[in-house]
Each structure stands twice: as structure tokens, then as C-alpha cells.
Length: 294
Length: 315
Image (cartoon, rainbow over the protein chains, first blue to last red):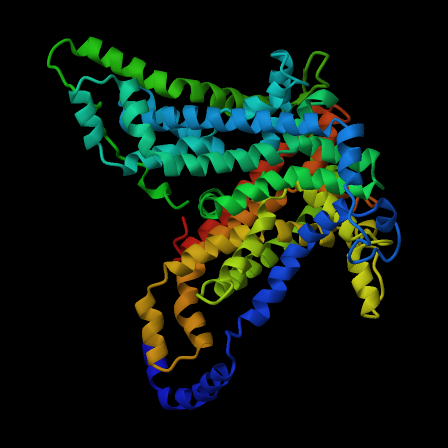
């Protein structure tokens, strides 16, 4: 490969020269010509969402819709919170996400630690089973899981949305890999000081695991907050809806009330956007590791 | 995928003390400890993944409506699938979406990553703008799609009108609905392929690109001759991953067209969801799910084998 580059080097420099000169004439990088329109294009749907949520209803039902609302109004939010249980659904979503995050962080790190550090009968077989479940697509599981939940009396309640998120193969694997990567010396020292296994785990190991736990928490937050398919199947009772189910439901019942739909969209998306802006680096790390979108 | 290689041969000593005597009691205690740590998570994973997967497999050989006694029907469900026109239509629609979405998302990820992988003014803003749609849910994306692509009131048709171009039916046109769904998926998920490529680009040895520049290579040549060969394993991974997620398309169909217009966006998962939870054909739905699983596995293995043969170690 290098030889082909070396041979026509003289020619290449002649060709390259004007390019260099042209770049110098611009006071900024030429990539802005690509990046600026692209960034705007990616922001348009979100900006439209926010604008529509504060627009007068009348202006959203005319063609063409004005690019900017003639005046700002919070009527959409007011109808959303006074005529629908949206606030209740938001609370449900928050309960689901919070329970899921807490449970995943505890159960997956316990299991990850067990797989990484403890020696016991059945460890390798169990770990194989955990990894195998990564391959199983969710739609294979939908029907039997529905049946199991129905037998356990979990359908139509918030529990239906929470239980599938209590622990998962991704989290266990992530935590195991993390524990394998940290040195054992601190745990051994703590053991010599007479700490029990649980004590070592909670006092010594878990505080070290903050970066991995952040990844796991973000993964669980995105997945559980945005989940639609499973709640759609398992929850028919409006009082146990998550906000995502509520929005999907509005699409049938309030199709033409765009200001209300967009207000619901804003309140459902704003928390995640806020977290994203506050912890962008952690979000990107999570995306790189998991690639899972709820 | 980053960490998956070091999974074998980790023989750890149990933390701490190692007394000589009563080894059986010791071992029992170790086993109890181990299972205490992994037990709760194992219950969830076995109960909600392994057990349902096995049950689903059994169900695929049964006829069952969820109430009456399940009836064993052998491979009837699978043979019925092979001749079910609606299923093959769903396969076709899923294929169309995969064909639109996978190449577009991989190319977009590559292009965006190359563009974002430089230190220029405003790069933080660009990254945030391109990544932030990733957090929007399928439900919200669906609402946005119907809003922006509304044939009567939508921004997209308004832009076309301003440019003097003919307006389109979009989600209400059977030949365009899948395209709109693919565009909105791309909007929400371009961030994923982009971050994967960005991470890979940052792993390309700097000395190599520097050396190429000194040798007089143009940026274009440097990219194709030096950088691109480093990216092929990642490309294989991204293609597999995006294909797997594309053939499982459901959410965005549900929140935009619900399979319409004229069933033109009815995907495989939409088909099996409909069979299982509307017409209560649990056995038939399970068979469709397993068929999809096998096809997914086949595609994955196919791409992995292909890349192995071409020596593009991605897995």
C-alpha cells in the first residue's frame, strides 16, 4: 500500500497544493458547510415539537402552519394536565424508571460480582445461560411472559412494567466485566481485616463501580422510560399507564389536538433531554456499549 | 462488544482467608455465598427469558387461545406460515424497511463520525444536536412523524410547496409510508452508528495518518487507504446490529401507521403481535416469532462467516 503512495508523490503534491491554498482562504473549516445544516436538520423535529406545544390550537390546524406561533400559550399544557391523567402517567413512568434503576444497580452488580470473583458450583453454566438470553429477541418472549404475568396477577398494574426491568443480561455482563478489570488487592485487604463478603461488596467494591453503575443506570433509564411494546401488551388499565402508553393512546383518541399531543411529548422527552445534556459523556459511553434503544 | 473477548478462564480465589481443614463445609459455604450473590438476578433472567423462550418453543407446536386446553398440532403452525400470504407480505415490508434503513444508518453514521471527529469551533454544539434525538421514545417519534409529514398541514409538504415541488401523501401513501418510518428511525438512531464509528476513528493510529499526509496523500486517499481498512470490523458489527434491530421493527409502526395504509407497513413483528394479542392465536404467533428468530440468527451467522472468510475479524 505504501509503495503505491510513494511512487507518484511528485504529482500528488501538485494536486494537493491548490487544496491547501483554498483552505487558507476560508477563516473557518469547510466542514461547517456540512455540519451546520445537518445539525439544524436533526434539531428541526424537536424545535417543532416545542413550538407546537406552545402554539394556539387554531394555528396548528391551518395550512400552511405558521413557522412561528403568533403568540405563545400554555393552553396545550393546561388541557393536558387538567383533562387527562398525564401527570399521573408521568409519575408512573418515574416510579417504573426509578425502581428499575435501583433494582438493576443492586441485582446486576451483586450477580456480576458473584460471576467475577466468587467460586461456586454451577457458576459457568449459569453464566452461559445469562449470555444466551442476549440472543433471544423480545418478541419470542412476549406471549409466555404475558401468561406468566397473568398467572402471577401482575397484569394491569405498575408491577407489570417494573418486573421485566429488575435485572438483565446486559447489566450482569457489564458489571462482571467491570469487576474483572479492577485489582483484587483492596478486597483481600478488607477480608484480612475481617470484613464479610457482603460488607466487602457494599463498602469496598461498589463505591469503585460508579462509572459502570452510571452506564447501567442510563441504559435502564432509557430503556424503561421509553419502553412501549411490553407495557402495551401488559397494561390495559389507564390508571397504570406509563407516559409512553398515554401518548400512544392519545394518537387514537386525540389525533387532532396537536397542542396537547406535543405538550405530552415535551413533558415525556424533557427529563431525558435534561439528563442527556447534563451527562452527555456518560450517555455516549452507554450508547457505545449497548446500542440498545427502548 | 468491546469487552466480550476476555470472558474465559478466570479462576478467582474466594476472597480472603483460606483455612486448611473441613473443606466440605468450606465448599458448601462458598456455594451458598455464590448463589446468594447471583440468585436474585438469576431468578429474573431464568423466569423472564429462559423459561418463556422454552415455553414459546413448545407453544409454536400447539394450537392455543389462552383459555382452552392447548392442542398439539406438530409443525402445522410452521407449514401454515409458509403459505400465509399475509406473513409473506410482512416479510416483504420488513425487507423493504431493512433495505432502506440499514445502509442509510451505516453511511450516515460513517459520514457524521468523520465530520464530528475534528477539533473545530462549535463541534460540541454539532455533537449535541446530532445525538440528542437518540433519547426520544418511539411514541414521541411517532407523533412527530405524523405531525411533520402530515399531507395537509405538515412542514415537509409546506417546504415542498415553497420549493415549487409536488406535495406527497407520505404516511397516507402505501408506497411512501415505509420511507417516512425509515427516515424517522434514522433521525432517532443515527447517533448510535455515529458514536460507534467515532470510537473506532479515535482508535486509528495517529502516526499512520500523519505519515500518509507527509507522503503527500490527499485527505480522500488517506481516508480510503489508511482509515477505512481500520473501520471494516466495526462496519461488520454495525451492519449486523442494525439488521437485527431493523427486522424487529414494531414500535414506530404502531405509533405512526398501525400497519396501514393498506397494510403496507405491516412488519413481521406487527404481524405476530396481531396474531398473538388480537386474534389470540398464541401458537401461531409463537411460530412466527421463532421463524423470525431463526432468520435473524441466520443473517447474523451469514455476515459473521462472510467477514471471517474475508479476514475482517469483527467478532
